[in-house]
Amino acid sequence: MDEQEEQVRRAIGTLLQSDPLIKLLQEVRLGRMKATDPGLRAVTESWIGVYAQVLKSQPVPAASLPRLDPAPRLQVLVDMGVLSWDHPGTKDLRDLFQRVSVPAA
Image 1 (spheres, rainbow, N blue to C red):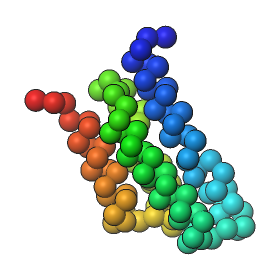
Image 2: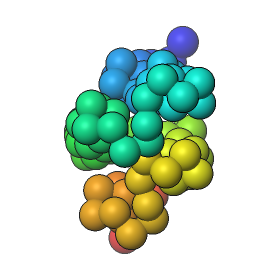
Image 3: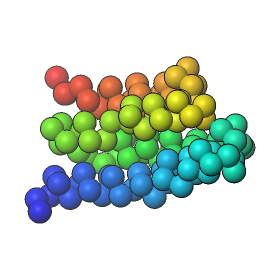
Image 4: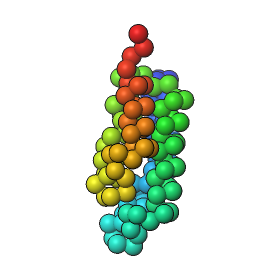
Protein backbone atom coordinates (compact mmCIF):
# COMPACT_ATOMS: atom_id res chain seq x y z
CA MET A 1 0.00 0.00 0.00
CA ASP A 2 1.42 3.38 -0.92
CA GLU A 3 1.74 6.31 1.49
CA GLN A 4 -1.14 8.28 -0.03
CA GLU A 5 -3.56 5.39 0.36
CA GLU A 6 -2.39 4.96 3.94
CA GLN A 7 -3.15 8.64 4.63
CA VAL A 8 -6.69 8.18 3.32
CA ARG A 9 -7.19 5.04 5.41
CA ARG A 10 -5.96 6.83 8.54
CA ALA A 11 -8.31 9.75 7.89
CA ILE A 12 -11.29 7.45 7.39
CA GLY A 13 -10.39 5.43 10.48
CA THR A 14 -10.27 8.57 12.60
CA LEU A 15 -13.68 9.65 11.30
CA LEU A 16 -15.27 6.29 11.96
CA GLN A 17 -14.29 6.40 15.64
CA SER A 18 -16.71 9.25 16.34
CA ASP A 19 -19.31 8.65 13.62
CA PRO A 20 -22.85 8.96 15.04
CA LEU A 21 -24.37 7.19 12.06
CA ILE A 22 -23.04 3.79 12.96
CA LYS A 23 -24.90 3.21 16.23
CA LEU A 24 -26.90 6.19 17.40
CA LEU A 25 -29.05 6.75 14.33
CA GLN A 26 -30.20 3.15 14.59
CA GLU A 27 -31.53 4.06 18.04
CA VAL A 28 -33.44 6.96 16.47
CA ARG A 29 -34.85 4.69 13.78
CA LEU A 30 -36.01 2.22 16.41
CA GLY A 31 -37.61 4.99 18.47
CA ARG A 32 -35.33 4.48 21.46
CA MET A 33 -33.83 7.94 21.04
CA LYS A 34 -35.18 11.16 19.59
CA ALA A 35 -33.36 13.09 16.88
CA THR A 36 -33.32 16.05 19.28
CA ASP A 37 -31.75 14.09 22.15
CA PRO A 38 -28.97 16.15 23.79
CA GLY A 39 -26.65 13.14 23.87
CA LEU A 40 -27.03 12.57 20.15
CA ARG A 41 -26.49 16.28 19.54
CA ALA A 42 -23.29 16.23 21.62
CA VAL A 43 -21.93 13.20 19.73
CA THR A 44 -22.86 14.79 16.41
CA GLU A 45 -21.19 18.09 17.31
CA SER A 46 -18.07 16.21 18.41
CA TRP A 47 -18.06 14.25 15.15
CA ILE A 48 -18.27 17.49 13.14
CA GLY A 49 -15.27 18.81 15.08
CA VAL A 50 -13.27 15.63 14.46
CA TYR A 51 -14.19 15.72 10.78
CA ALA A 52 -12.96 19.32 10.52
CA GLN A 53 -9.71 18.42 12.30
CA VAL A 54 -9.11 15.51 9.92
CA LEU A 55 -9.69 17.71 6.88
CA LYS A 56 -7.34 20.37 8.26
CA SER A 57 -4.55 18.15 9.52
CA GLN A 58 -4.25 15.05 7.37
CA PRO A 59 -2.92 15.65 3.87
CA VAL A 60 -4.97 13.67 1.39
CA PRO A 61 -4.29 13.50 -2.34
CA ALA A 62 -6.81 15.46 -4.42
CA ALA A 63 -7.90 12.30 -6.22
CA SER A 64 -8.89 10.73 -2.89
CA LEU A 65 -10.75 13.72 -1.44
CA PRO A 66 -14.16 12.62 -2.74
CA ARG A 67 -13.89 9.66 -0.35
CA LEU A 68 -13.81 12.16 2.54
CA ASP A 69 -16.72 14.31 1.35
CA PRO A 70 -18.94 14.87 4.42
CA ALA A 71 -22.05 15.69 2.35
CA PRO A 72 -23.50 12.14 2.18
CA ARG A 73 -23.21 11.63 5.94
CA LEU A 74 -24.53 15.11 6.64
CA GLN A 75 -27.47 14.35 4.35
CA VAL A 76 -28.40 11.35 6.51
CA LEU A 77 -28.22 13.49 9.65
CA VAL A 78 -30.38 16.16 8.03
CA ASP A 79 -32.88 13.57 6.79
CA MET A 80 -33.15 12.14 10.32
CA GLY A 81 -33.74 15.59 11.81
CA VAL A 82 -30.53 15.62 13.83
CA LEU A 83 -29.03 18.55 11.89
CA SER A 84 -30.20 21.08 9.35
CA TRP A 85 -28.34 22.46 6.36
CA ASP A 86 -28.28 25.89 8.00
CA HIS A 87 -26.73 24.57 11.24
CA PRO A 88 -23.40 26.40 11.75
CA GLY A 89 -21.41 23.16 12.08
CA THR A 90 -22.93 21.74 8.92
CA LYS A 91 -22.21 24.92 6.98
CA ASP A 92 -18.67 25.21 8.33
CA LEU A 93 -17.83 21.60 7.52
CA ARG A 94 -19.16 21.85 3.98
CA ASP A 95 -17.27 25.13 3.44
CA LEU A 96 -14.07 23.61 4.82
CA PHE A 97 -14.37 20.61 2.51
CA GLN A 98 -14.84 22.95 -0.46
CA ARG A 99 -11.71 24.90 0.53
CA VAL A 100 -9.51 21.82 0.87
CA SER A 101 -10.91 20.45 -2.40
CA VAL A 102 -9.74 23.47 -4.39
CA PRO A 103 -6.22 22.90 -5.67
CA ALA A 104 -3.64 25.38 -4.50
CA ALA A 105 -2.90 27.98 -7.14
